[in-house]
Image (cartoon, rainbow, N blue to C red; front, side, top):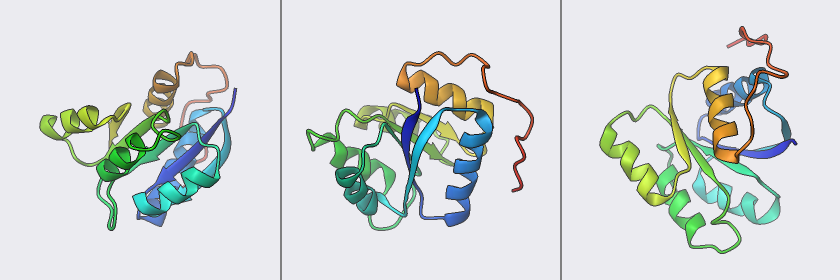
Length: 141
């Protein structure tokens, strides 16, 4: 089964890195969407079918935590899992992500193997190595 993914990050280069890393991981991605912050993400979530949101924490207008809180208040969005990718590494911050409803988090920098395993864990899919080539998958960043 392929999944629709929304990546939310205010940095265009980081959105490209996340997309390339997901593709290199062999994760079954169907449609891919991008947003520059939580506010833009909320608009996209109301227009497009999304299976998982991958978001940065630090963004202008609406950060990742605020996005999670807004999604949790919306009946149509609260069941969509959110994976936070961040440089924030404190245990306190990680607990805050979980308390607010994040399905998981990954610290930057991350590998294709890490992101594949976390996406499969969150979506309840087996993450055997079928389709995963290993290595850098042709990443050019």
